[in-house]
Amino acid sequence: MTTILGLSGSLRKASFNSALLRASLDLAPDGVTVEIGSIADVPLYNADDEARDGLPAAVQILQQQLATADALLLATPEYNNGIPGVFKNALDWMSRGEGGTAFRGKPVAVIGASPGGFGTTLAQAHWLPILRTLGTRPWFGAKLMVSRAGAVIEDGELKDEKIRAQLRDFLAGFAASF
Ligand code: FNR
Image 1 (tube, rainbow, N blue to C red):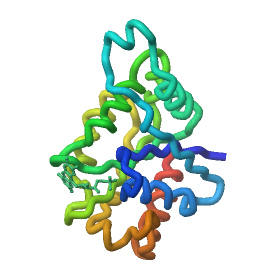
Image 2: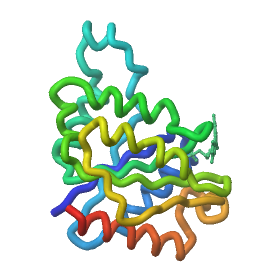
Image 3: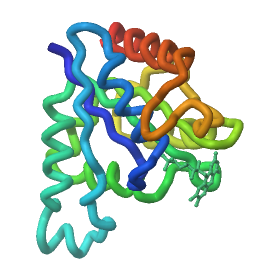
Image 4: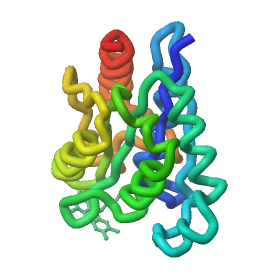
């Protein structure tokens, strides 16, 4: 069984990006399981806290999930044309200590949803230097930028059949790449 760790970069309950990620649970190809991790309990990175206490429990859990997963899927919101701070903060913590080596060589794909017309294009591009620095293997075989998210995601569920098909194809292509 192939496992993809999915992380959403939004903390809000009605998040479009978390809904998009949840849809991948049903749309992953046979033999592939998406396991959704949570960044909700990751504190703000502070090197003094790290030196004193080591890695927070929430970060250790994420590192373990990453280490055992075959690949990583990021569902990123876009804030001010870039990555939301909470999402970057979580990956910064995850990159620390021995567990941070789990990023190396890991296949990573990025998807995203926004209520506007550009579907997180700039946030997805913003991830690239970070994924390179972490030594990951970013997958560029397809793009999924969900614009006008309010029209395709209702009550926390991805309803739009066209986008569901795009996500299904995206996951199949990504899983076939590793
Ligand atoms: C936004 N939003 C936004 N959207 C976008 O497409 N480009 C942008 O640059 C921004 N900038 C931005 C800044 C800040 C501080 C906030 C709070 C929001 C809107 C954003 O896409 C919207 O809130 C989404 O709903 C966030 O994703 P989730 O929480 O639905 O997953």
